[in-house]
Image (cartoon, rainbow, N blue to C red; front, side, top):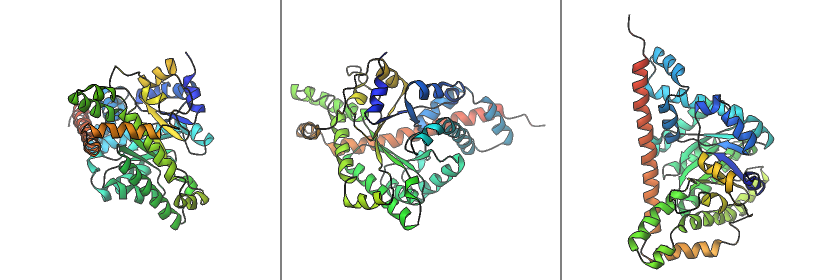
Length: 372
């Protein structure tokens, strides 16, 4: 095994695990990944929690206690998920301290049913930050139209945020604008900007999945030659946008006030098409100041045979733009694709959350003490 993960880390890519479960916490597996695989953060989402809790592994006692107390299913889910995030945050606390708060972070998402409701998202973000009660938590807010003002409001209150479900370059610029506006609010309120952190989760593989499907429909040799190029091009142009925004005059004023840059985070980095190398969305998106959150299979693949050759984003912007333009010339609408992916992303997380509510409700009923 090569130490590709160390090389990735040395290139300025923070390696985060896109998974969490109680078994991973209690078995020592998470601590082992931090110690041996250069993992410096954890992301969660409704689908991850649905899978973990539905497995039942390690949750029986807490579910029994919650059933005995006759709590609502919504409260039960929040008690269970925030307990896992709190414990993971404690395991990652030494990393958080060693990196001045940049890494060692665990993300937890607002209820996905609130994705199109600004005020409810803000209220939920405040509640989650209070419930977990760890400085190394990131509250995940989706980059929907309603999510943008919520990001500004939450950052303005000094709560660190992971902005999720970003697919388009235009929306990503809006996300960075929302972050800067939040920092400006926090500064006006006299808050310490050095304590506020954020990442912007730019989704990768799903872009190829959707555009490749449309290229197959076109069916020409030219279309086939473009398969597997759009997602990398999109992410690389996102990094170009990041460089522009965080070298602007507006940013410079915040930088002087000790603010932290909002790092781009590559999400959805597991390859969906077996024709592509399983490390594609890791080794071809290497640049300083980024985060790559990987499912464990992608982490293992990168550790085993990932070829980290240095910065693979610098110098690619012209080709990236050409690749996206070539896709557009074939009649494939970029705006249509990214809007579809955002809508589907919200729907998938909402469906997973409802599945989780239903399966947990069934468990609470099963474990409820008999009356009498």
